[in-house]
Length: 336
Image (cartoon, rainbow, N blue to C red; front, side, top):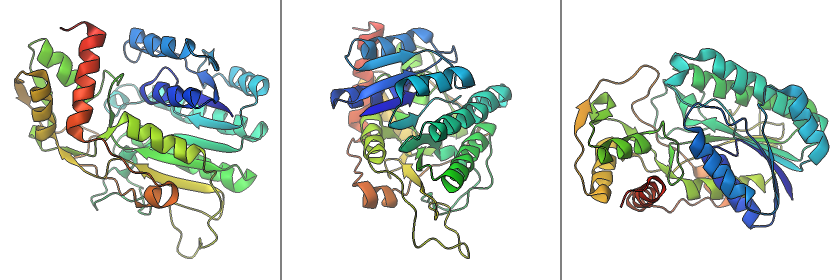
């Protein structure tokens, strides 16, 4: 089928597009290729996609309403995966307007385009960051998430609310996916695995926040993409058991769903670093620091709903995932 994917120059968007093209779907890829991180890496991801039949690139921002509507009118996608966003908790502390523009204005434009052009199903990226000040573990989509601790998290919570409004008012099927710390080859340079690998290979110290006491539900990119594809193929439907007397945040009587998509196995940051050191064959010089503003000490995904509904089963151990990343990094950046 014809699928419009936003964020195709990004980590998850590029990997998802590869899988969709491989199974015979046509992919309309939208990305503005901004300079939030190394544009050369984004262009390299896109080059791999443009080499494949069935891929069409459109280089615009989601805030460009007229351009976005024209793309929908021209290509008439059956389904849409919205992965384009201004990412990063720490960047939101210093560049708040980037999150309003891309994550709120841009997402509104996506919703309105999906409504106007009668898209069958919108799947969109939310984030584990929405859990904010929550401490009940594992994090569940059936818990309220009304206390975000960063503007990035607040923008993703807002996306979920906006999507529900369109599902309720217009019957647009929407599914939000709360991603938990995605890592792997072709990953983002602003994330820990990339930063740690770069510094260790260059003989520089690594910054270890919260004095290494973080726990993260690290989830390998292939497992993430498999889950996204399964959800894309399962159009959201109303929950007949939903009650306004005891509302469930994860579902609705509208065609609306939320899922956690994670590994369901938190890893201690210090063990994560230990595995990376083994894969690189080098010890890291560690600069232990307090926890940063907007960060949370731990994430842990309850993925029971995703397992039940689509048979989601992440299977990549952290040792394998980090080894795969290191092999890619050394090859891509020319380390022998």
